[in-house]
Image (tube, rainbow, N blue to C red; front, side, top):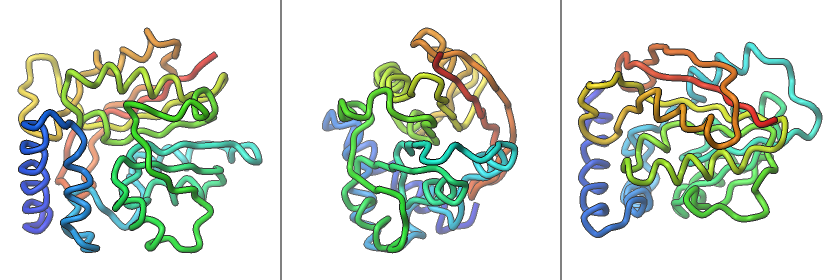
Length: 225
């Protein structure tokens, strides 16, 4: 990890601690994007392209049906959203940070992606059950453990009948110290989706080095009947 990325991550942790002390689990995202003031180097998860585990997965898939809708959760600066759009998906992407959404629109002025402000913990009712693909990358691991069950339930509710939820997250084993934010997830935490009306279809444990050095990841896909 280069020094700028390290510094950006430490600043994100500092902002998160302050926000959590106030009882606000997600307010630090807006603080981070606003403080970055257009400098992508100050966003620890910002990259110029889609996540490698998403890119790899898309390469193994057939083209989606015409007009098939995808939702990107916690879209950040839009790299994954644009990747899905290029693959043929009709993409809606949301983030809890208004500054991040404004930034996406400036970075991708000719994009067909619909970028909008939204909260995974309280998604719009018109989104429920509407997406053939929901992509979640790194949002759950940035939430305190007490909120992950609620966030997971929201994710499951967004998936249309016959649709898929694709999750990418850092991974840890039982008994392993989760350390500091971002908190790697246990496989048992992802297994919660199977109690929420979804069926596990794919589960891979892989290494990915997107800006972080090699780290263990889970990539899992769940479907709704």
